[in-house]
Image 1 (cartoon, rainbow, N blue to C red):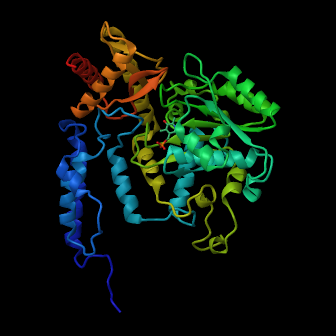
Image 2: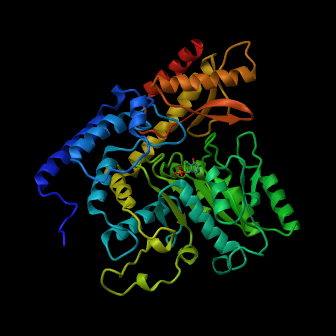
Image 3: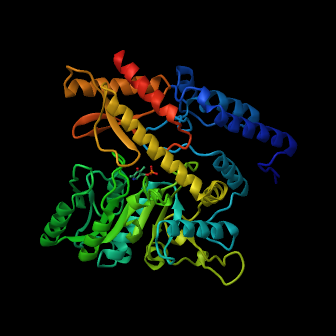
Length: 479
Ligand SMILES: *Cc1c(COP(=O)(O)O)cnc(C)c1O
């Protein structure tokens, strides 16, 4: 019988290499400003990643690490850079990097045993339900993404409010269930409607007002029409920070409608739920505390390392009903390793789960929620400042109101029509990205192409905003 393991004969050699990796990794962060934000993969790098047969034999880790340094590290997305503002992507933090390292060393499966990882996750979830203003009996868990958080929350909503036993009976032959949200809602909600058997046709996309918030009268009308047609409205998804423009729906008013209509109110707070952490900004999220469930992302505005998001639900009973089928091999006991109290695997779809909670716990302990709140306030100020520069600069123009941290704008030139400006701005976007200077992304608002920056980056300074906007003007002038 062979006695192979994956451990080295010589731990000291591995330890030396490990130290070098850690030093290099932190050094990359320390010097991030000195490198271009992004660069495309040259042909030899693309060729290196060609699909093919897997290696049957191993080779020394230091060689593999050299390949990592040559082919992987220089060509990643670039979101640790201070001028990365595309989509909604966080930059992470040094304490977060170290927490990931420690979590990897422990390699604990946080499915919910009698162990410190699950206890820690329960504690951190309680910090967050507390910060969001939910009652003490609220519960939740960490998941991979805001998208998964929406899936988990909509599963619970469906099972709690369908009016029949979806978990046991399924949806076949039942009255169609309808969920409401604004047209600005993130497409992870469309995905969830499909995955959960609700059907995208039963996802009502309600028009928005001039501020891109859900039109409440249109919402009421849509609910009435569905009832009249014999369908079953069960849930409304409210936005706390839309991806296009950062708009926040009137959460208090939506709560009122949900109560009248006996609907579940879910808040997609992937971007904006954490505004609640700042006493100054918390009023923007008024009504968040009345949600039945909240999805929030920690790898975005909380700058925690990918990936970590969370979902919290007002009532533990409702959440566990969707995710706790009996299984003899998962029985909990009064003592021993299986005597878990907080059991995340009964609150969501994953059984085996990593220790995402450690980086949440460690970064919140290290920086304190006040520091996170100050970063969020800083980014809000930077977005406002970007808006001011754009309004002052005749060659730039805002394309939407910017109530939070998302700015949509375009480069303009007299004599060009909308369609020509759309094409020109697309070229501006590509050139700015290829220059490695800054990373805006794009969207389309009322048919018009917009450059879009969403500042959730803890590393961003005021001068980064100034530089990026002046470079956009310079690049636009050159096209
Ligand atoms: C990013 C985002 C999501 C999805 O979150 P992921 O973590 O990227 O899966 C959902 N809703 C909104 C409003 C978002 O901005």
